[in-house]
Length: 137
Image 1 (cartoon, rainbow, N blue to C red):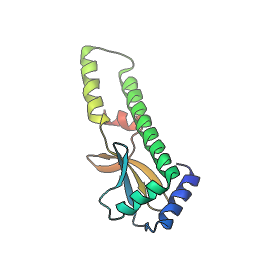
Image 2: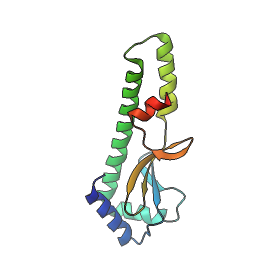
Image 3: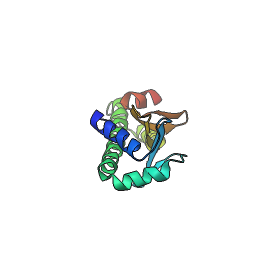
Image 4: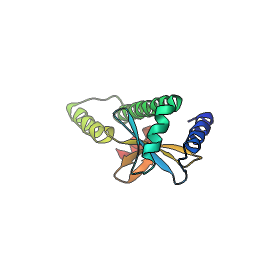
C-alpha cells in the first residue's frame, strides 16, 4: 500500500471525525466494505460514499490481494507436487485448495500502518503467501 494513499486515508478519517486509534478492521464482502463490530461504521459508510477515490482504491486493493493470494496458493500446489499428477495427488490438491481457498480478508488500520490480513483458525494473520501455503501442507 503506498504512503500517499495511507496519508489520504488517514486524512479522510480525520475529516469525517472517525477517531483512530483504536484501530479499525475493514471487511470486504460482496462489494461492500464494513467496519467489523465497530460503532464508527455508519460514519465510515458516509465517508466512502463521499470519497469515491478512496472507495475505488479500497476495491482495487482488496481485489488485488485476493488475486495475489490465489496465485500464491496455485504456485504452492505446483511446487509441492513438482508437476506430478495422479488421482491420489489430484484428490489431495482439491481438498487442500478447498480448505485454503475460502477465507475472509480484511484491512487493519491503526492510523499509521495498513495491513492486509486473513482470518484463520488462529484469528487474524498476515495474508498468506506461497511459503505459508507450503508450510500448511
